[in-house]
Each structure stands twice: as structure tokens, then as C-alpha cells.
Amino acid sequence: MLKRRAILTSVATLVALVVAGFLVWRSSPEFRINIEQSEIQSRVSAKLPLRSCALVVACLEIVNASVVLSEGSDRIGIRSELLASLGSRQYPGVAAFTGKPRYVPGEAKVFVDDLRIDELQMKGMSPEVAELVKLRGPLLLRGVLQTTPIYTIRGNTLKDSFARFALQKVEVIDGMLQLTLRRPNDGG
Image 1 (cartoon, rainbow, N blue to C red):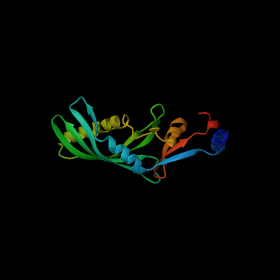
Image 2: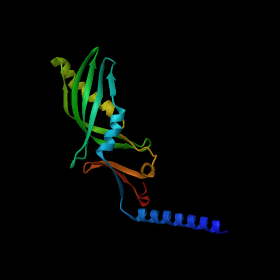
Image 3: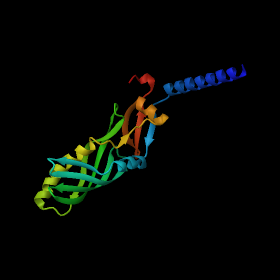
Image 4: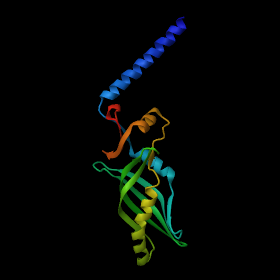
């Protein structure tokens, strides 16, 4: 009898805590989860190298990348080492670009859209080939970045599971990737 009473008391306490938490959450302003640059960097680094090809003979590979989330900017910055392949020739280079985060709810993934190339330099190319790379390189970079997420909400923690369920928007604020979760009374 004492064991049964202890179990009922524990269950009642747990239910009361869940209800209280739900009521606080429902009446509170938006809830936000901040993701630091280092966490995004580790996830991006794990996916490298990334390769995108056009007609098999022209490829662009992102070999090494540094993620930059700057104070006062709403964009994700990436500075990377590149390797362009044209036929059997390879040309090393660097690129710096920024983009806005885009969240895909069904996949729980954040991608980079609205890409702006700030710098694209390749070594050892003739002027004609360099011009071709400047024209086609951004398209290949967009192809890689719009299909490869920079962050995935895995769902293996309570915070991640909650974020998958209630994520409303993703944006860069104050040098961090900010996930804004909706409240139940927001409707959707």
C-alpha cells in the first residue's frame, strides 16, 4: 500500500510539473534556442569535402570551410578553400560568401540560400578559364549549398525534439543562429 501511494504521489507530481511547464510556456513570449558558430562549424566540417559538377568535366570542390556568424549581420558567412577541376587539370583557390538561413521543416534541416559571393580567386588559370570559373563557379557553389544542410536538428535530445515540433523561424542574430519556437496559441 505504501509503495502504491509513493508511485501515485510521484505520478501526480510529474503531471503537475508538466502542466505547470506547459502553462508557463503557453503564456510566455517566444522561446529561442541559440546555436553558436562553433557548433555549426563542427557540423559543416564533418560534411567536407563537398563536390558539385557540371557536365562531369567541370567540378568545384569545397575542401575546407570556416563558418562566420558576425555581430550585426543577418547572414551566415563561409570562407573556404576550393579545388576547381576542368578536365584533368586542377586549380586551387579560395571563396568567401554569405547567405541567409532557410529551414526545411519536414527534414529539420537548415540550408544557405540567397548566396552572395564576396570573393572568388583561383590560381594558375588562363584569363579565359578564370572568366568561365567566375561565371559558373557561383552556380556550382549554389548547387552545393542549397542541397547540403549546414545544420540539422537531430532530435536526439529533448531540446532538439521540441525544436523539431515547434520551430517557427531560423535567423542569424547577434552572431548566432537563432531558432525561434512558436507557442501553442500561435496556431502554426
